[in-house]
Length: 343
Image 1 (spheres, rainbow, N blue to C red):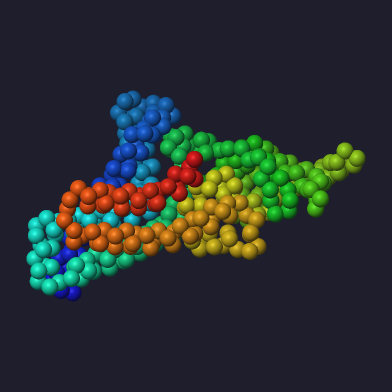
Image 2: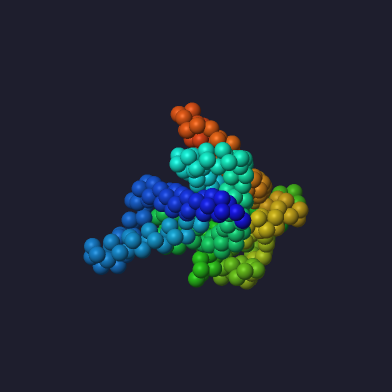
């Protein structure tokens, strides 16, 4: 590696770290401003230990929420961070006439930008590790909303209505609580209506409580009654202790929100898209995220190359507008899919 390569590379990495901290900080501050009223609800749910205790509780809640969100925010802003860092590096070289002197010495512009391009490719490995290894391990933390930090698991509970399993049964639940680090997934007022091949109801499965043990739902007070059609005679309740199907906490999350797909690894997405699971919930979102990730890796490098293409031009108002368009385009392409799923 030549002296020029080391100089350009170190300048780019320094600007990359600065851009990383600035953009992450700006994202967190803006999100905190718009959602501070939900985060501060911890004061009404805490132990009531006074103003000092409430202030410390709010700080802890903010730290507990945004520390894990940083990994997800980085996955969204990785392309913008690289473009901004490359732009500042080349603009600095041009501002102090270092770029002019290097070009006058016979060094092509592409040769000067080569360390930046290679570094951008290598930094995509960080994005790959973040999406495939870090974020999937933090799903319980990343799937929390702002108001759920203070209210606990009860805030994330919701009803399940007419979710179909792989045996044509329709599942209902009065309250479903997603799994956490300490507690498994749980359903209260479990209600399942089994259907035959013609779509007619054939049995009714009820339970007061259902807990997922990793393989099946363990039922409390489970009972099954068949012969539920008007012209049939009902059978005596049969005790049922276990319900096993393709309805898992992961499938329930896909059934409820496509935003959950953003947190899965590509390997897990491929498993959910297997031919035998073609009718699984969220198939469209799974395909969207799978192809969008590959596109994002290439887009990050293409955005840096677009910035390099304008590096040799004079820094005029037109060039500043063009640079703003490039950065805005990368930001919109990166953030638009997530915003669409949240709506």
